[in-house]
Length: 289
Length: 171
Image (tube, rainbow over all chains, first blue to last red; front, side, top):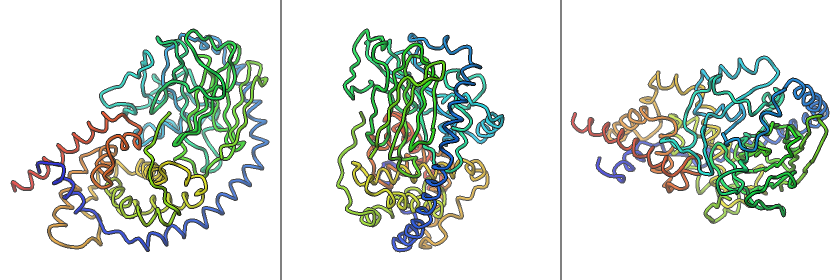
């Protein structure tokens, strides 16, 4: 067992034969039910979206009222950390115990504060890569729960198996190079210059608030949001269904949707920025197809 | 922005299926520990590709999309069963309908026993590298980790596999 080729031969020899015809029949058998499921989901979404949106608005106001530390976290010098949703934390790297913990945490039905547990301690534009690399396994624990993200329970407990995996990140507007950088669960990089907005050293973002960019490059849909200092929350909807919302820390937020996780391809994305009174500051709606 | 290598796009889901289904199932069998689960997630991924072909066909790597969807589904399935699966040591009963040649059976048991010692991510890296012949860079994209992490995972996996095989040969 001295080289790659020997290992490959042994592994391949251990694998089963595969019947293509049987497999194709299996695929076809799944298409009909999947179509019906999709139609049902769309119908259910149409019925529930109104109530959900009303709830989202009310919830935003109520949550803001209960969150006196909003202003404290609105700090442009905060070092970026990686933040994720409960959905993301339900990754294969998270243990059963963690899932049980999450379930207990969400059982209260109010909100969840979850830390993706990756890339803690980022000190600049380059992630602090551990020996295991990004995505290193770390158990979820209350001590590591972040104050940076608060998600409504409704965003975490979807009525159907529809919601995409959403990574939430932050934009560090004060990195040493003066460029905008974002850090998320699996990757990081400069905020792209899309839609006419430009980031340059010394930008404070004060005059460039709004939806900075929406990038639909496979395999992710990434939405960069720059919010004014007085704003407090950004909400993301896919096909009019609320997916996630984020209280910004560094005046900016990044939503990254892993398209490979989608049950069905969304055709429309909406991002809304609210101020601390719950009033809409900016709203972006765009088609994804 | 992430740049994916441009690949030839299949003209239809069926063409993509004919070209990659077997490889994907074999690869994910290595990860899942049983062929039925692998077939299930791969077929479901192809069904999703069929439903959204107008969009997915425009991607640079539709096969990569199917692989990612299947792997993610597999991870979801495996999450709840992984510990139990390890404890039960089901590996020796895998692939009941594989050709029953003595050497294959021996190899299978040894490989599965060795794979049992690897983490889910390590097995995935091994499957993508040795079964699907994906380059390290692409495996890194699939797993969402750095290339260095993939190399590290493959290195550790090789060590485990070598040790296991050498023990067998010594016996």
